[in-house]
Length: 330
Image 1 (cartoon, rainbow, N blue to C red):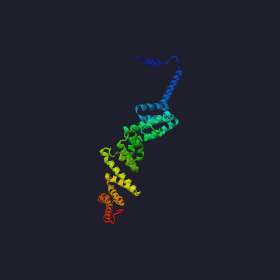
Image 2: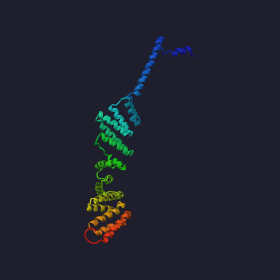
Image 3: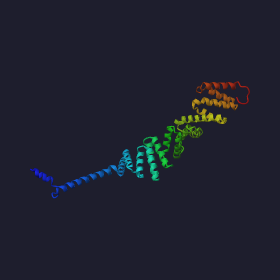
Image 4: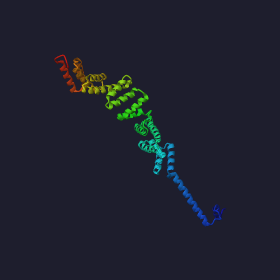
């Protein structure tokens, strides 16, 4: 059995017996202070320095934890690190989480320091845009990323992105923004009838029916049957608009040709009666009275023209029937 005195002597076995008590206490205090300093220094390196924050950001990024990486990179910037490498890391993390405006701002700053960063930044933003279109169907993010890439590196290759972006802008009624992307897409895929139809629609929505008609006539016999009615409607609509414009300018032959297209297409239904009536007026002015009567009769029979137009068409029919003299306008 071990006595209490033996336990005490065993507990003190590691303490040099030759050291005086005051010197022993001094060494113990010094050892404690050294350990405290080491712990503090290691904590500063691990959690306080910008190098530590960047390293932790890189590790988080490698794990795919982009939000955590962004937090660490931002910490490094708050601690005063504004080197190009830190700016680009932070911008890249912003882009990964979809915060394109913040990414662009940091990329701009990095490009000021190193112009070569522009290529890296544009490539990064285009990767984000492709992912947004292919995986997330997020046209808003894709558009923001592409526009940012184009600011940093104008003329960058948009292969595979032009058409989705054009369709995104069209869906949102931004036809002016859509057209340049449709044109880029045409350069990639060639004369795709559906793509040309979408371009025609964009021009029509922007009020350029003349160019829209050129595209629509080009693809009329090529579009799938399911889209044929849309082509006919747009052909009829734009022809009617161009006909009214030509009629106002007294370009009668040209106006007559446009109205004939609307009548042939049978669309838009609510414009047919007016197209027949205007055709009748032009033919009457040309002295082609029998044809004019036929046109007024068609207008008079179309209920969608409205009561006022029906009444006017009937009056014009009666005027031609009972007119006197066979030459000149009806």
